[in-house]
Length: 417
Ligand code: ATP
Ligand code: MG
Image (tube, rainbow, N blue to C red):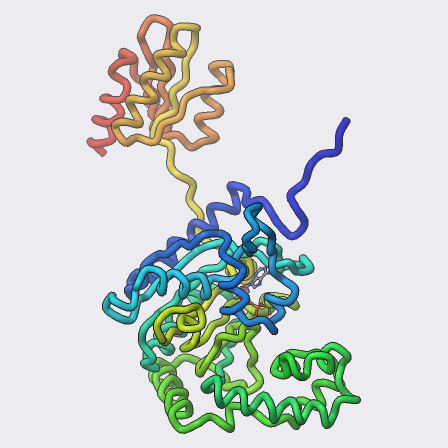
């Protein structure tokens, strides 16, 4: 015998029981986001590698070690999307969406791919719900995006939530700050972890994320970007905070908040949940005013977030899941009745009833048991002579009718209730 095949490491099958909870999550996201003017977008599963190399940033963990990049067979380098913002900005520029009324608000529910060490809440193919608003630098866009995300997480009953917020300023302020931070790191290089030390020049900001005790000590006395914002950025951040305060949303300002993507400017934020273990990040996002231009489009401000579907489901209380009701189960006895049962089932579906027929060769008793398992409202048992017994499963009432009358009877009976 040959080995039984398995799903690739870090991936999983969404089985029907789990699919129902995901549908409930999607329904909630659609209601919250479309109610606020966000419209669904879907971009390709893979993009030119350039979209992420330029968009996400060459020094980030994602681009350095997490991307699935391959030659498409025609000498072009393509990458399975590791995130959704850069592709959406690519699409915004490609389709001239700057000519539409601004901001353009888009949302997605898609799968993403990162070459990571699989563990609870961390997969190689995972799903995100995301929202992006492009074309406005109004602080209300940032506050609205954060509040919608908070509403979504609240409606899904994701427990133990904490929101951290910061501002990264402009790329210029950030570049100047990076140099100062790198200087601070170099002055204390002997106390840093080897990987932080090796990346002082490449990405000094990532040192804030380190768990290494020596590195953490060094970072405790590091300069903070939040204290060096220029006047316009500081004002923008204050305006975002004022709106969130007005909405009575709880958050902490965390000047050490670093997001793993290079494109952020000004506002950044992250929701974590105590209900999750080590992988506590539920959702994150921020403003990315330079990204569309970096991808060759017109200068366009933007702000958005992405929330991990697996982590939301892990941290959420059980979502209410109702299977589709079955109006009619069509059972039959005898070789001729099979074709008639098929016809009755088809007719029932044309009349918008949820109908299923016997497909497994069960006995009469087995068929009735199956109908009961499905929670069918009515069962019709067809015989070989064109007759049928129609049973109302909730009252137990039975009625003899012609097979051709079954659907009409069910419709009439339902209409009378
Ligand atoms: P982490 O710090 O956990 O690696 P991240 O900063 O890389 O997260 P983002 O790129 O901001 O995550 O993605 C937004 C959200 O997507 C995360 O908060 C998380 O819920 C989810 N997410 C990210 N990577 C994965 C993954 N490999 N598997 C499952 N969910 C993920
Ligand atoms: Mg990550």
